[in-house]
Length: 439
Image (cartoon, helix red, strand yellow):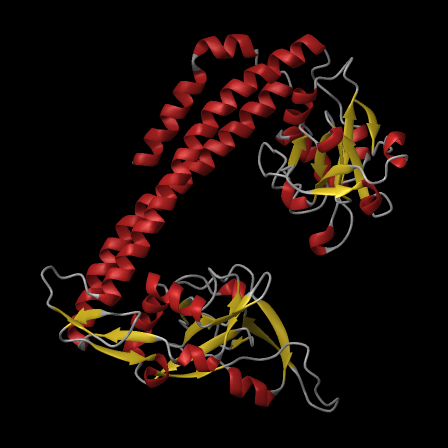
């Protein structure tokens, strides 16, 4: 199937060690059908002695480690600086035997469920560092071996997957637009309300310059008690009994909701559990992370009976929990993004905000009855956005599944691509998926 796995560097670069070459860390490889970002460069001398894999134009890169392999990270190397590069050691470099194997066809083979299902059992390692073996590539049995047929299949899949991908991109953009509409609705609700012709009055806040005349601007510290969380890796006396306890970290606190898909546990003492235990109505707010994660909040609903928060997540306990949801909404408004960014400490990759600065966060509070009616109206609007977004995301998933099935059927010879193309099956299948998404 291949002429080389992990090919050796071209000797010419050893004689010119200052040569610039393409550098490809894992993030340079795209998910799905693949692709390679060739913007990064390193000199040959910088990377030749490291644990990197050499590749050239025409080679195929395939992620070997989970979850990158499952996500389909792969690429055909093209437009490389000086025709060559070095990639992370977590990818295989495959050089096809071009007399017997079409490179584009091979790339589609690596995208097929047939190859994936045969490679997965070869994985070794623990946890998130499991890798497929070289043998899963060397021993994979190609169902289509005629080079002319391979090229015909690759050309067919280029056309058909491009059509599917264009539709997927349109749907992704729709989801993005719905997210923007959602953000705009929340921002309007917590700053000027949703009622028409509301009388606005000026304030002294740069972030809330105008609010309805019946509202009042409060700082978060006057609405809630803000505390930090449990520090991981701290040192405790040997004789202190410890209990394995779930805790919330930055990854769990999303914009307006809690992600329970991956809840970690920590060993904590009885006094720590008492101090950091979350209560229903607490507003969890991220202390650090990327700028889009900074400060964003969500209400703790008590789904886990006993749960703590890590030190990178603040817990704001409202003095009146009737305001919990409103406070959470305010942390996800557009003006909040500006406030958290301008009051944070920025480093190269991360940002963080202090408890003191978080306490200064301004929130416009309406009379309770008006707040309740505004949230009711807002939730009705958000439910419409979410219904459309959910249907669109489902449609995207179904299109990706169809694309994967089509690739698998083509590269394994289950369909005759010329007959399939003339039949219009792709159009009918897409129309069916669209009809299902709209019901």
